[in-house]
Length: 89
Image (cartoon, rainbow, N blue to C red; front, side):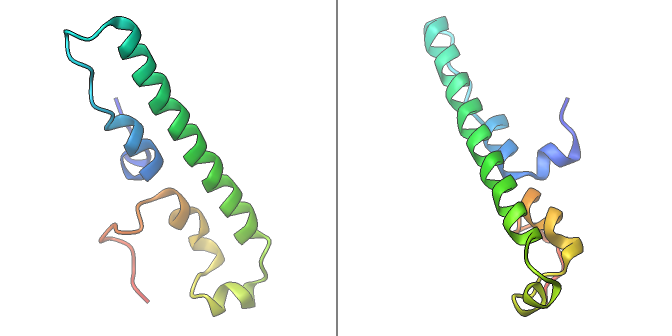
């Protein structure tokens, strides 16, 4: 079962959308495919955390200059920016 956050986070969407290996493929191939998806997801989540830390370190005036409010940081980094429910400035 997936949550709304998992469905909206581009990193987790990548892992959840990993194509399932067909019945003819070996169990080893299926395991390696799943491990690769987990690895890519972990790297993506780490990049999100690093970007959040950098943006969190900026002062409010700098954030305003680039069109971001501090309360939007989490939403911007953990949700798909193409989400139509995001407000446009």
